[in-house]
Image 1 (tube, rainbow over the protein chains, first blue to last red):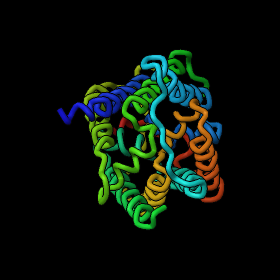
Image 2: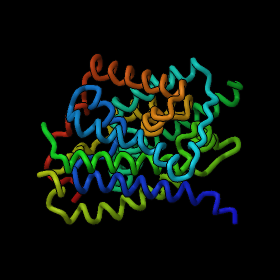
Image 3: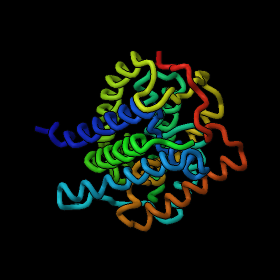
Image 4: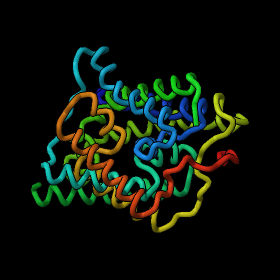
Length: 138
Length: 155
């Protein structure tokens, strides 16, 4: 069955939804990674944000413990692209008040108009960027 | 503000669940993310399943959160009460999307990858934090502070 290929993606996504629900239900905060990292860098709620970031980094280690291998990671983008991409992601997520987790997961789940607008926008420019990369052969 | 050990434990467990979910879903792999964004090429729909699964579970969670009066370990919910779609939101999201496409990484996977010690994702995170600082220090720190909210705007 073709659909089995996407089962890990679906289950992984559901765990992300559970994580976001748990963080909001217990701690009253949105599990938006750009917000958490941005606040950590600014020294706001350091303990809480550092604990979440530490947990996030534990994720691949837990995966390794369970499956005996590291998750597959293939970075094909060149160095200049990686450097530009990192800078734009940092700047853009702070300016747009969120990323794929805050707007994408929680924003859509609570039907926030701002988040729907953000998701449509970053999907559109993301598709445009990848399409241009492919056409330009980068 | 000091947080209780219970809150720190919840943050650690939520973060781990998030990072493990990303790993299981294959979303630590920039090639798959770029494959999803490559709708005019060899499209890989995985990310749609990830986002669909996450949003579906979070929607169920929202049903519980809506009927609660306050979070279990905190006196109030910290959720943005902004409702207006403004140019800053759109411009910021547009810039983020370009970076997302160019590198195939967004903040969650990029930070999770730090523990694997890969050079390019690590440099990506450094550049990302620089980008965040450039915004917060030079362009105003909107959204940096703890969302100033109570109100329980989910209702």
